[in-house]
Image 1 (tube, helix red, strand yellow):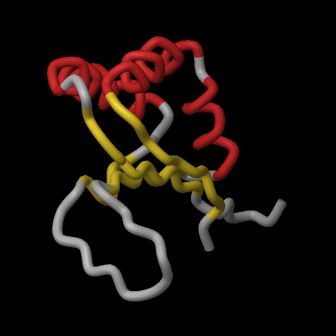
Image 2 (image 1 turned 180 degrees about the horizontal axis):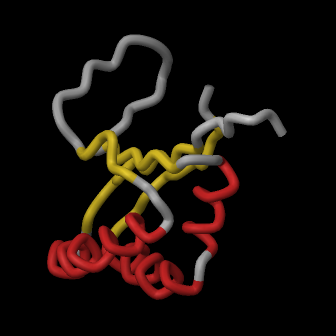
Length: 101
């Protein structure tokens, strides 16, 4: 590994929300856990222009972490496990964790 870690990103596409109240509860609780893993939100919704391909994103959320490893530690952590289940019970999502440049 080089002296400067590459950032890690978690990208969520909120495909559909069936329970807004559960999602609101999730949002209130998730920020401190993301911060604990030094994550910062870089995208939360907003205007979107589809420019190529067949992908039809709905509502994108991206979180940046200092490293790919830290992004995975956050997603797999005990602290996030219950919130992940809460989010899954609120709707349908696509998500990836990727290494940045």
